Length: 547
Image (cartoon, rainbow, N blue to C red):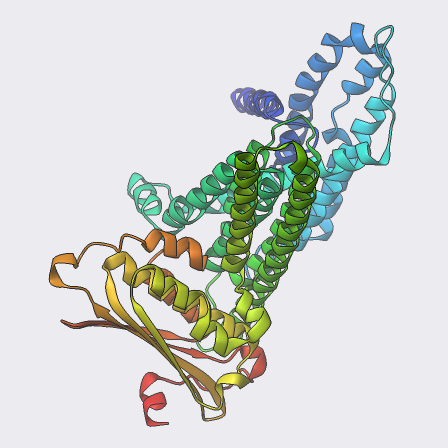
């Protein structure tokens, strides 16, 4: 009898906890960001079947209250349909999916395809239920009932899908992480670990910066900042797999929603659509990069496959950055033409000083758009290729900004034969190294040496950046303009650990050497794995020196 009573108390606690969570999340939701849908998906995926009746009761309580508290305004038919919890229709579909598609593979990896499939099913059920309820709504006298359009249905679907992406993957990552932190010492070690530090330093500050830029910029800048919020998600995916994508995706979804200034802002809905597509893709990629079980140390094919996927993911992100940069330039040209036409019409009635001020403001806006596009993807790269980018591109302008001389030497016939993503990774790492050096102290001269070659059938490239140190009085203090260099080069500025991690994706190593007069950073990268067989050897600095 005692056991039966305790079992009922657990069911009551589950129902009450679900009802309270539902009401809390609903108070923070909008039609295109339906957080209760995420709670529903997470619970149906993770909670055992024996507690599903408690979940249904827990959802029935708040929806019944919400329906009948507004019955006089919208009619008893609407209130009756509103009282039917959507989880009642989702539960059979989720039960079928859980029986046919396991949540975890036999090797311990999360079946992310199954998770995303159930998220789609949950969003579809939520959209149909919301649409059916809206169709029965009876408006007060004198008010017209809302028309059911494809835009409204798609908005409900996006709301359920985005809400589920915001909560469900993060809940799964939390569920897998909690058993490993049962003691206070384990909690403290986890909070000091790389995952939380990367979230705190590599995700939150960029999202806050993009939110601030969106709040102070115009409509075009705001939309670009919203779309750019997927970049920290991609970075966390490469470092931590799908748990990183889940955590960063939740933060990015919240950040996009916080930039909303009006109810049902179409630009926010468009940005959320792109973010949802990016998060879904990165979750699938991350599930392949971060297996939950240890691999056989004698079997390197899985590890190489993971590096190949990481390289492909980075290359795809570079292509997206290029598309974004080209879109920014088109927006800048469109803004310039619009401002020019506006000034031409207003010139007869504008004083000379105001005309000059408006023209100057238009020129500054155009310059900032081009600067941002160049930081995302260098214009010289698109127009003049690799050598011009290293010799005359943003690296030269960054060195001039801090008052240092700059020279670049390119050598080796194999350099041009490397895969395009290796070229781009080399440029990104050169930018990161320059920012790292300038964050330490000012420099007087920067010399970049790049050499490509081939050893034992595998192409490689070595980059060495040698910087002449400043006078002793200025050492240990960052260059005054180094933050401007970060903005000019579009880097993360996260130090040597980030440089080593990114070089490792291409089988690379990084060496750092400090002397009394110079700071020197050298790194070695191999060609992309898709351009060479998996059995290709790994070349060391010693082999490169003898080649």
